[in-house]
Image (cartoon, rainbow, N blue to C red; front, side, top):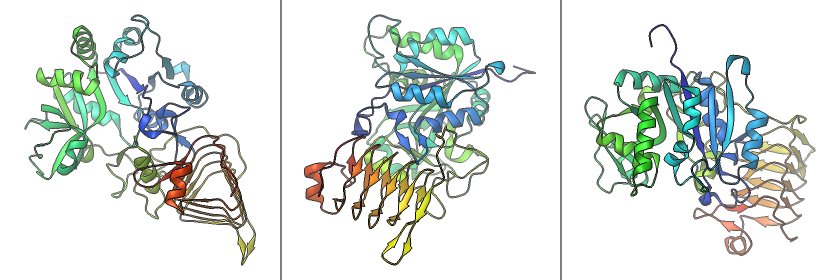
Length: 414
């Protein structure tokens, strides 16, 4: 290793169906779900890897992958002259006529990519969480440990342990145990009120990953899962290390408020809450950190426009994020995220909501605590998020009371 930078190859696991995000995942894979106005969920992990200097990336896809593949092809083009690429790799049935049976099996069926690239280390990251992370700092930790794998651990309150795969560290930073959703978690030595939750991000020494995946393939009792099987096996072999993301990962430009931020947006309520994290004066997750940018492709659109300034007809958006191409024409928007091309017409009120691309809010319509997917038109005078019983009769409503309207759904007139 002396005298050269380590050769790192990244595998992004982007095959999840995202059933708990229905109806947003009705026509697209979970990593392709739009987020934060301009982005898709996969842009966050790809930005983290690219900003870390790791620019040889294969994205392993499976379910409803067309829009995800199209986004990657259009957005993530890098210089081939320097050997950089982001490549979308669909399930190719290299081991018979079957889909991936788990995240470990996805890697097994793509071992040819590893052989072709011949890297020193392999980053295996998930595709649908929100965070900023310098993976090069995790790699330094991994190399220093001498272990076969390093798992990124997020500090969470011990009472939340039953929602995560929990890492129990030894005194030397190695992993003593890896337990899925334990009911009797053990607190950290330096803070018994916290535990390490696995973020689903792993850094492997190449040989150790290949050996682990081959062992897992031979096991008839395996679920072929990266966490429950591969990591558990390497922990049992005393060959796993933990990287403290909360304390040890310092991303340039972070603030005290957003340092260590991480969200799993696997449910409608978590997706909604993550949007609300963006719009405060001092955001819990700050998209405006230009030293570690979240990268994407934006279609060419005109600037946002706010028209009419009369007492009874004023176009305004307050405590909100408004993207290019939006026109607020005599309506009022509060605490909301408006994606490109949204239109809000005279007398309409939008509050605490997420409107995806091209949504049209008719005159005098009211939209509260709602997520409205692409291409939906809300007719004049329609009320959403006002009457819970009426909402449940017409739309999908989450456990937290968020109304969700699917892509291109037709809403009947008032």
